[in-house]
Image (cartoon, rainbow, N blue to C red; front, side):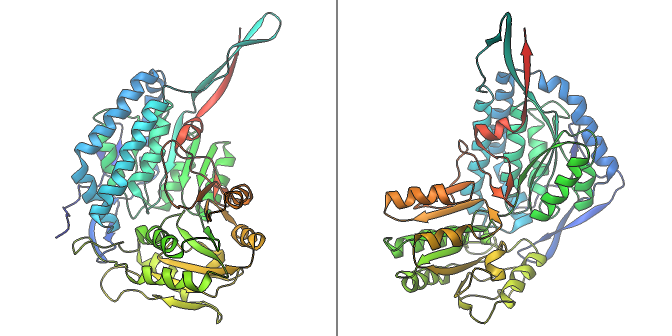
Length: 477
């Protein structure tokens, strides 16, 4: 029997204390592995977001004046506290997402603690220009300072990890935060705030749960000076428009539709095995998932056969049964979205394997491979965000790059080849923020994670992510 425990109660965390919504309004939390309600969370309103922003503003002066070493100790303490509360965090995340608990514990939780530990060190290593005299008799110095209160909105695919990606750099730079987790998956972020309260002054980190109206109330509040969101293109557009009215800074990590270029000199079986493992991880609900396989026509048929065989061997199921390769989709709406794309496939497309929802309780979907698609097909142009992969063939390097770049997204891509020159040409030509060569999907805290085009702007992780939460001041003496 897989590990699973009752999740902790979900409450807002404001000014160092857990509390329900001021109105008493709540929203049900549905277990995607069963379709049944398993708990509830506050449906926060304007009075809640105002209380959180006020608390963050009140805490800003004290936190922003702490030394980098003091902030480092706090973030290292949060990482230790996360490890000490690992069982509770696993229960909270699995209850909201239905993902395999062992997989979350071994793959995602270590990445969460590593994020806090990386930014703990980065806080003490801010870059800066040397003081110099650029005009006679006056010395110029640059200061990097916190932006202020940061409003942050996180998605439902990696609830705890995305919260860490937002919170850690903001706190390391001396900012205070008000974070709104996704309405379907707030439990682990709310618990993280409670855990972090052991190491932070009240008001430095606040969490308000709620729906889209809660998010609108937060992003339109006059106090935050930066809005950071990981979410859909729709959400990014709306938030950017809201921020423009008050000239707030915006940090957007939006959708993805990652191409994978597989040249004719690859080991077909090895590449198919690695790509299938990444493509269906987390039910394909990953903005960097390898969803568009572009395969040289000389290897196309062999690669489709090998990849489809790997897909058929994968198992999806709930967390309280035998270990599965991936869990359910996040919601009934997401399952409907994936099924809608498949139902509208043109006649020239072929479902090689899968294609259907799994006939059981919960929102499970078969691992699916679709071949024969064309560049202007809806399923190629739109982000699927499910366990579905498309395959196209190409004739030469030029066509491969044209197909890869021929969508509105630009987050991640990978190229598979034994030709070093070809790989380097691709890394230069691909219009994405991340390019992997002969691998796909690995992230490290030291390197930036962000996109171009409709995938947004700004970087998570790395020193670039830390600098996104700072502003520069010129001081002349």
